[in-house]
Length: 127
Image 1 (tube, rainbow, N blue to C red):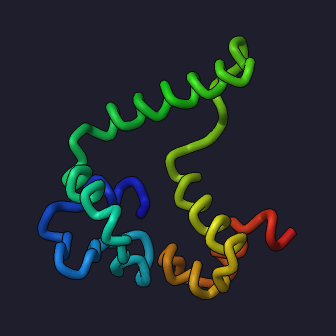
Image 2: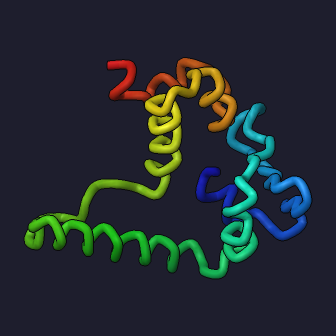
């Protein structure tokens, strides 16, 4: 999900019996869809929807996490790691391809409008 999609998701978008989250995508024509969740992870979804914090608070937690990781790896005087919450979405796609998923499957799971959009984010596996 994109961050804005997550923040708009409500309990009505959850299908407890099928472990599916409906995504009311608005970015492109193909953005609307559904995401299947592993049953053993479903309790995390129910705890996280609706988002229990504001966008500003979510962003603040992300900033703090980036700073903490930087300090752990000796980057105390540098800017926090330049990783956005949206980068995690693309990391999912990269890990899926690295794990053997087909690029068209990843395109579908990311709900990209075109295969070329998906390919922009698959650095290691595709040069």
